Length: 399
Image (cartoon, rainbow, N blue to C red; front, side, top):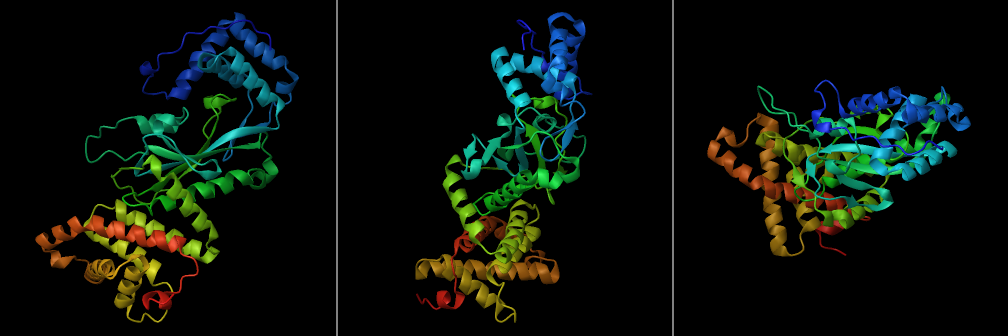
């Protein structure tokens, strides 16, 4: 597209009005240049004359979880913005790629609460865990990056990271078969949720799926101007804590993903509930709630096949200690921790109180809770990775 050299001063984003988000501000900023005429208006005219553009008029352009009506003016605005961000030569190459291809790249994103990421973590299957700074321009990124100063109470917790993957989808959305047309998007969404849940099996890490959406790659049409990717809130509880997810955890997370994928459908379904309870136990504020959720998670994990409810407390302690203990001394320590955790959970479940509401004893439990949390994470990791586990042989030390 021969349009000549284009130069537009970059907008000062720090002056964005409160009533507009970044996308809206940039849209009207670059629209003003098109309305000035000359070389800027020539961009719109040239696009309108392109047969490839004409073929897209009135069509739905897919973004994975949503689609938007193609508008030539929006494409022209993206073109001017992208020149400022990536240079004119690169922008023209990406424009032609978009117009000539039947597919388009899309970022599937699951924003999560509870973790900080100092730098991108690269997992298998193209999955990345990104700090908020590395995410593309979007309304969500702008909203989550702002600091709220409420007059009363606590600020609402906001994600500081997202789990993402990028893949190609059909550029034009088929209204009559949206689910089939975007099958890869929904399959990858399930995988992102799986990763978010599995992160809870790491020591000291709690991760809550918060908001699922999708984005066009910024350097490809329509970039940040393609409208909202849609999506839905996914969280059940907030919690206010954040933990740093180390970059060195990639291999451990990949191992968990591989092991989880090998589980039967029934075991996967149960493990989703176990991990969800584990996550809630890590994120809740009240110690009674934390103990209750952690105890439930471990009971679901360790007692699933005990249909007759025989010797629940004893079975709970024996299985957990033999599963992860490697020496008699270590098993004895774990046995005692599980005994105490089971007793505390029973107190809360049966009476609504912990330690009879004695402040000194409750504080002692609160200080021990990180040990219980790490113990639960360790047990659940072992169960995800366990192959053909035979509880009877295990607790008898056979094999």
